[in-house]
View 1 (cartoon, rainbow, N blue to C red):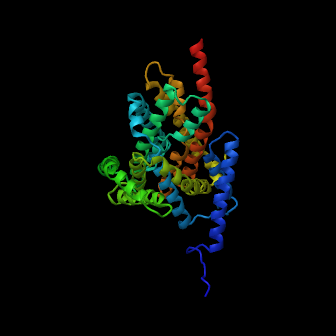
View 2 (cartoon, one colour):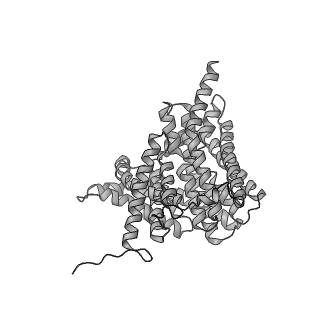
View 3 (tube, rainbow, N blue to C red):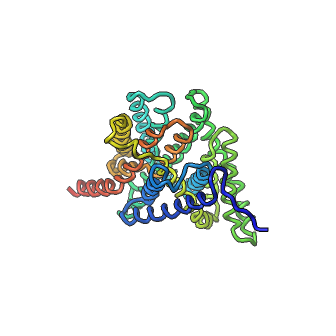
Length: 400
């Protein structure tokens, strides 16, 4: 008797398969085009979502199953970020990276928060909009520095160290935003508690995991079945994500903690190599769905009713750039602050995580969500040429 294949509730199997194929192909084509144009692949994936989403071609509908696949992509992406983070190397960068990271988080957050208040937004919206400006995309900055042959420079070490610290702070803030969004209000006491829980979970999980993870990896290393190491890594990310959520934090922190603790094992490179194809499959689903959720009509300057959203988006772009440039001022003497500040500008995939959480929790409506995605797109797009210019300018001024 043949098995009848059906799609998820509310979505036929044919529609689901078409949507998934469109997401995967669109993400790959869009990413390839963006890369060939000298831009990060994530930009092409977002644009693909804009074209394929319900507000354009309609091939990618908004559905819970697709959202779940996107959430898995986010968890795996955070796991990979944790896995690629070298904590000892980050600590060796010193106080300069910490200063840049703290200022690069505090100033954009405060600026975005006050600007949103000034434009009349209320409740949790100013908090979420401020939070979206705190991120820094380490992947984009690292690629540009590599192309310039400057990965070994003092400025590059500070930038990358600060960007990694930004990621850790950002994930904690993201968890805080998620909790506040679910509660529907901002309570200072619970918010501080959630922040402490998030940081505490990360520290405790990594500390305990360093004792257990090597033994686990050695045990799995003796398995005779294919994919045992990959299964351990992904299962650990999912289970720690679940544990983080159950303890009042967020699944994202648990996934990142899993990556951090496995990063200290001898099989780190093997795990990273096996996990990368899985991330390459699932993470673009998230970025495409982010693009698909944007209604471009709400960002059209031809419609008078969009003036408020466009003013908000333009202001956030300026604050996003200014806040990160200012962080370069505290990098220290003898450091090219303009290069450091410019390298902190791109928001990339981390900024999109904030936007996605804000929309999922209902804090950001379609218009505000579109404005935030526009901020991420603009800062990511201008960062590569701006960093190249800043480096050439700093070199020229030194010669002079």
